[in-house]
Length: 204
Image (cartoon, rainbow, N blue to C red; front, top):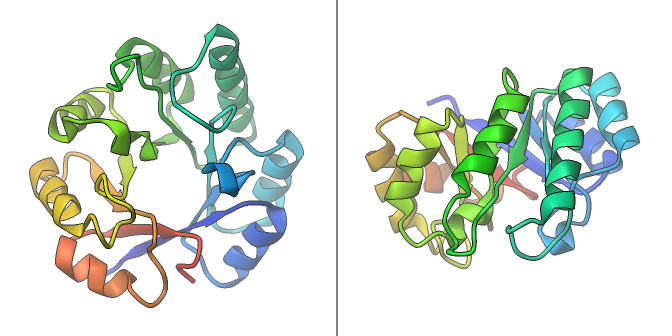
């Protein structure tokens, strides 16, 4: 089975290393200790210019929760347009409302701005209680994939939930395990859950 390995990196140097090690795709971030925030425009541009791997840029103006104010939402839109203008593969985003459900209106706005780039809904998904309902909503929004640890501490602990979500998705959307996924365990996790794409900082 052909697996697609996405390496999560916290700066350009790590992105270059992942590229050289053969990452199929790179999630380009800053501030990984906060779960990842949007990297600088210079970092994004240099990665696009110098690297062969597909590049997904996280669109997250700060750490903390995923309920953003008006100014933060405008920042996200500006960052998406920059990524679109320079032609990176796609963006990684997630907005929740006060009830910790998907903010459908604002997510749709970002998706419409981002297309035809690929779009991943990030681990904000793990804060959502009704994950199957959320999958249906993300399919309707035409989002390409969901990054999740199955609502658990990491994807290994959440593998039962991930397996169930992959079966529920029925190839309508890609469910990509992340969190605690390494080069030592991704093959076993893939076999157990049926995941075709896997994500981690130590996956290579």
